[in-house]
Structures are given as structure tokens and as C-alpha cells.
Image (tube, rainbow, N blue to C red; front, side):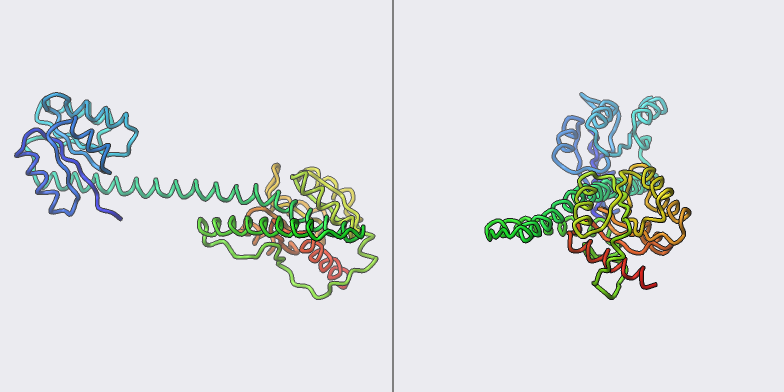
Length: 352
């Protein structure tokens, strides 16, 4: 941690010199001046942690200096020195936000103790302020991850669908395919940048590549029987619901859509015998992913639930996997990734 910077303000040279000499021995960085106006200029130009100011000075007094420091919206701590009107000035200064006061003539030992206590408080507030900034930054990055990964999933899956449609229709356009590949590459780059930012702010996050499932199955082959069952998609983002529906129906699956936890649970409760797999967005507006998972399992203990999220793999997702979720796929994912995973899962379920 950097050295604490202290500004001593006193129009008495001897008093100012005494305080400076004592505190320099404590390895503080000391600045000094003989007026409140000069003090304000120093505060504007330098990074000051603590101001020790006399009350009675020519021109602006110490109480008025304290008021102006507080109006500057800084975190500077202030200790008042008073040899006049004693307790009344002390009370007034504390009411205005000073953290302590000292009476003149100054006792050297008391000065050292009071300053040490003030510095401990300053350092604690700095740590708390830094923690709050990092927490706010982390929350912002987390939200950005989720909000950007959602449309990236639509973009990546949409690109795959366009390529497939071109192939099915016999359309050959190298220029269009080139541009689609560029869009896909740029989208993946954005996803990678977001992931790196998230890992910087929360380095303990478990590292799972985009589109990586938590289950590892053997066969890529799909059977006709699998297509007789439905896949329930519980997802609050309309664009993702629609692109997933198109992707899965194009592969021959039947799809049921739910836009929130309440609707998804209601559908599963009445249609569970027809639903082979549930694709559950872990961050829904009306419930937590783990609670939705528990309610679905309560309806059918053998339900197959695949988790997906635009947020990072965290302890809540890990807990849900430990309680029986079959896997997790992170957003953004493309058509090939989600189809490959679902094919493997359905075949594995049939072979049990």
C-alpha cells in the first residue's frame, strides 16, 4: 500500500514544524502550508489522505476549511487542532465530519497515537472502497457477459442455419459464405474477450470452453425413436427460443417452448410423459435455476435436464449438476454444438 499523505495546515511556524518532524519519523509523506486557501490549492493538486489543521488562522479558519473539504466530495480525513474555545470547536468540527481533534499545546505522544488511529481508519476505508469498486466492476462484467452472450448465441446458430439452408437449396456463393465466416469468427472473438474479462474479475470461476458439455457420451448416431419425443425449452429470451426451435425442428425434433419458469413447470407437469429432454436457461426472471431444477425433479425424478446460461459456470450450476442435471452448455453456442450434445444425450438415455 502507498505511503499515507498528510497535509499540515497551521499559521504558527513552530507548531507546523513540530508536527512535521514528528510525523516524518513515522514514514508519512508530509506537506505543509500556513493558510486554508493554500491548503485547498494543495488538495486540488496532490493526493492527500489526511489534513491536520489549526482552527484559529488568519483569513479562512480551520472550521471553514473543513466545510470546504467536505463539499469537495473527497474521502480526505481531517483532524482539528484547537487552543481556543476548547470543547466547543471540537464538537463543531466532529459534527461537520472531522474524525478527531487535538488540543494545543500539542502532546507528541498523543499526536502520534491520534494520527495512527486516523491512518488505520483511512486504510480500512480505502480497502472497503476498493472492494466496492471491484465488486461493482465484477457485477457489470458479469451482466455484460450474460446480455451479450444471449444475442451471440442467436447470431452463431443463425449463421449455421443460413449455411445449411444454402446447402439444402443448392445455393453456392463463396462471397456470402466468406462474410458469414467473418461474422462467426468476430462473434467468437467477442465471446472470448468477455470470458477473459470475467476471469480477471472472478479468477476462481471454473474454466469450461464455450459450448462444452459436462457429460461425455459415445455415439453421434441418432435414431428415429428419439425424434418421437419432445424437447422442452425453458428460455426467457425470445430470439434464443425461436432460433433453438428452428435448429431442433430442422433436425426432426418436436419442440415445446416456455418463456419463464412458471410456464415451463406447468407444461412439464401436464406433458412430462412426452418430454425426453428439458433445455433449461439457468437465469430466468421469475426463479433461480436451481429452484426450477428442483421443481422439475419433484414432478419427475427421472427428468433429463440440460442447463444453459450466458453467465459463467459457477457454484450454483455445479451444485445443480451434482444433484442430477445431465450437463451444462455455456452461451454462446452454435447449432453444431447444441445438436451434437442433444444427439449424444438422447442416445445415451435410450441405451440405459
